[in-house]
Length: 124
Image 1: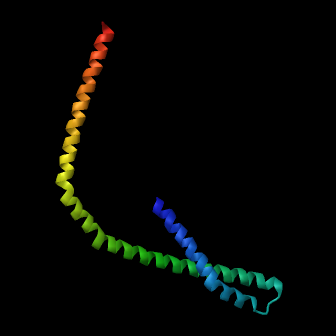
Image 2: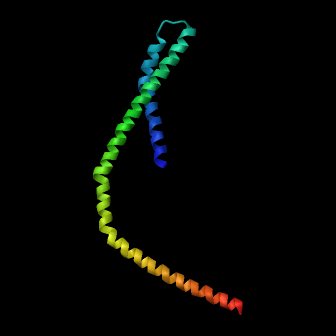
Image 3: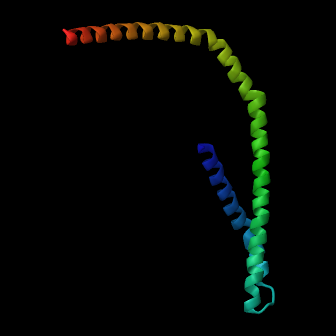
């Protein structure tokens, strides 16, 4: 969930960069057309809409490529290393788990006996 917000933020930043870098040239060319003021506005709106549509498609294709690259690197390089590390640590983790389990059983037994003693005293 946190990652989706981060990717949305980066997408917005990319769109702003596209607008700043490439939008200026497209918008100035639309303004230099010799049309009356009432006809200039729809052309300008269409130009902006088409530019945003192109920029969004380009940004999405870039994100798709980046996602595929990162996913392949994760699957091919990072995940196997993590799995090997866990395989090495598996016996240690099992031992620690068994220790914790024994300690927990002991604590439960002690606490239950104390509870039982308390109930006995209440009944007397």
